[in-house]
Image (cartoon, rainbow, N blue to C red; front, top):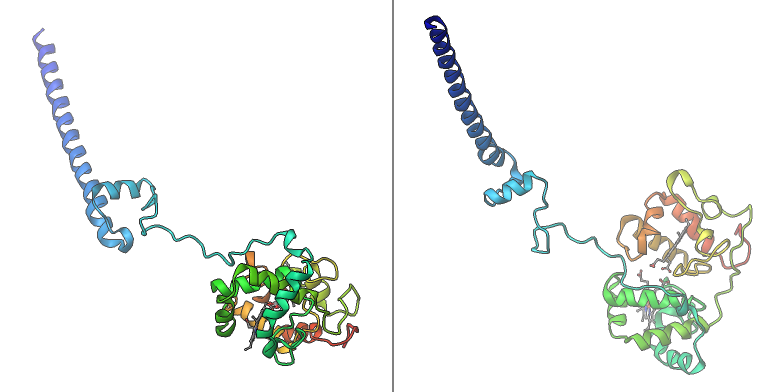
Length: 274
Ligand code: HEC
Ligand code: HEC
């Protein structure tokens, strides 16, 4: 039928036009998005630094800029210390090792005292836990803890020397102070800490309630030394504490609180209140 044919012709003509329009629109859209993705975005986003089409596509899809270590990727986090503490490091050494340590320690008496108790502001070493002395000497040696003098002195020590010095100092009697034990009269930070500020009680690690491997004996240390170390942890100048155990706490302590705990631990007698 002629009328029907005419209608059909009209229909197919309109559909064909629409299809062409759609194809053109699709092409225009494709070109626009390509221009936006490859030209406009890289030009307005400073860190886009397109290194070619492939790189742009990968980054748009979420792939990291570098899979391996070509230097452009994220740097590995800074490690606080290279020392791994083991309970075996606490063992009592035999007397020959202690004797060799005593000879080596002649180089240290000038600052740390003839029997390991300093009369200046250097830390006491007498009666210090052997694993603490070994860890600190290793950290000075590797530069993880910095102090110009101790870095150069420790740099010259072998692993054997370090073990001998640690055994010798651990064998000496401590300064005239008794261990801290739980007592209502202890300063609040020492006894219960401040949970709201993430400060754990000192006696949970430094003796009194628990003694954590690697936490130094603090009682009787020079007050100035204790305060200096806490300030160094607070500012991050000292950063050799594994898992930021001390930095996390010192960061939240005020100067007055640092002074208070330093005075407490530097006490020369048994009394907690002195
Ligand atoms: C010229 C002075 C001087 C001499 C000599 C010296 N030290 Fe030290 N030592 C210091 C000072 C000061 C510090 C604290 C440094 C700091 O703030 O990090 C220290 C820190 C230490 C510590 C860390 C203690 C702690 O509680 O964290 C150890 C261990 C140590 N010295 C061992 C030795 C040994 C072993 C020798 C001998 C081979 C020696 N020192 C020689 C001055 C000295
Ligand atoms: C979670 C356990 C933990 C708690 C709680 C803790 N400490 Fe420590 N502290 C350590 C460890 C571990 C080290 C040794 C860090 C290192 O390896 O250098 C240390 C080191 C220190 C030193 C440096 C001593 C030296 O001779 O090098 C001082 C001072 C100190 N702590 C004071 C305190 C005070 C004060 C408190 C309470 C406010 C406290 N700490 C609470 C674990 C703890």
